[in-house]
Image (cartoon, rainbow, N blue to C red; front, side):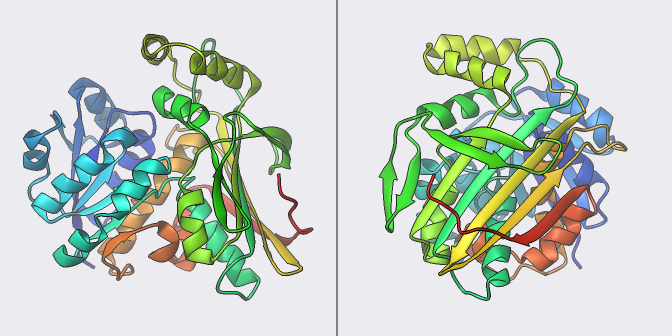
Length: 367
C-alpha cells in the first residue's frame, strides 16, 4: 500500500463532510487538503470531521493547479460545471481525478480527455458518488447475477427522504445541479438509440427499500444514460428520481423561474437533518431473466451525518482507498463500471452503513 495525498475540491459543500470524514479516518490517506472558494465553510467541515486537514481558499484558473501541486488524487465535489477545468489541473500536476458526476453532457466532454490521461498514466473516474457511481456498480453486479457480460435493459431509480425535515427548503444536494437535472431534457435509451424526452416526464411508481417504500418518480438527466449503452450493450436504459413532495414542488417553481431565483434559493437553503435516508434500485434484464439490485443508506450515527450525504460521498472516498492499495489498475478516463469492482467497493461501503440486496424480479417494463 502507498498512502496517498488527497486534495478535496468543494470541501465546504453539501456532500463534502462524508468524504472528508471518511478520508480522515483512512490509513490509506497520508495528507488531506481541503479547497473551496469559501475557506471558512471548508474550515468548519475540517473542525467537525478532519481537524488535521489543511484548509485553503482557491479560485478557478492557474491558482487551482498550484493548489493541487504534490497531491496524488484530486477529488472534485464542486459544481459539475467546472469538471473539465479541474481535470486539466489534475493533468497539469500528474494527479488522478475523481468526481461525483457530469450530468450527461459534461461527462461526454470529459470522456474526450481519455487519451491525455492514458498518456499521463493517470486515471479519471467520472461519477463515483451514489448515482452515478454506486448505481453503475449495482448495474455491473446485476449483469454478473444474470451470468452475462451485458444487459438488455437497465432502469435506474433513486430516492431520498429526510425523516426529520427542517423548516424551509432543504435540497439533498446543490440547488443549481438539482434544477439543471430537471430542466435539461432527460435522455432515455430506447431500441438502442438515445432519445430526449420532456423535462419532468412522469416515471411511474417505484418500490424503494423501506422506510421510503413505493414512491412516484420523474425522469431526469443523468450520466448513466451516456455510459451504460457502451458498457453493457444495453438497448433500453432510463433514470428516474423521487424527491420528497415539498422539495419537488419547490424545485419545479425554481425550474420555471430565473437564474436570480435559483441564486436566491441557494443562499436561503437550509441543511438537511442528520436523519436522511437514500435508496437506489436497479432493474435489469437479459432475455427473459430479470434481477433487481437495491441499496439503502441510513444515517451514520457516529459521524452525525445523514444517509443521503453518506450515500453520495463514501463511494468516492472508498475509491481513494482502493487506489492506495493498488486494487484499481486502469488508466484513462472511465465510468465506474469500466474500472472498479463491486466485490471490492461494496464491502467498503457496507462498513460505512450502505446495505445491498439482490433479488429476482419480474421483467422490467419500459417507464
